[in-house]
Image (cartoon, rainbow, N blue to C red; front, side):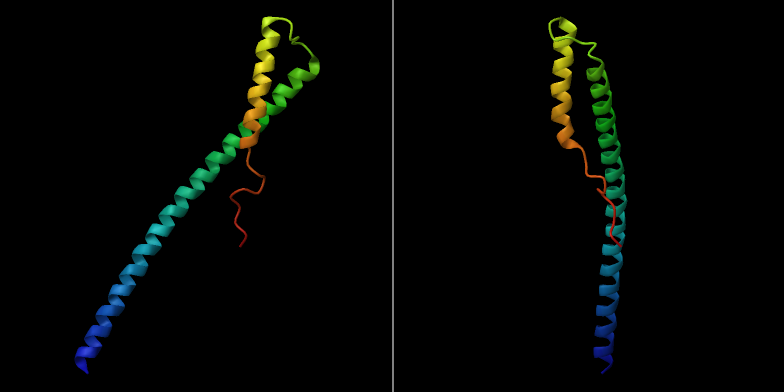
Length: 97
């Protein structure tokens, strides 16, 4: 009976260590994930702000496509349209607890 109690104690201690170690790793991964979500939100914000700025410049009509600046501006608009696809949804990374 004593041997069974010792084996049970060793198994419980081993499982306790496994749970503790896994919990520590999960906490570390959550911290990394929070940092990455914050980074992606910042990038998405910059994309949104640049989109607004390009649209404001385009509304004024200051750049015509017949000169070099106009051609460059049209190229910038195409780039902006491409990176708009990488914007995040507004609720990205929010927990539903």
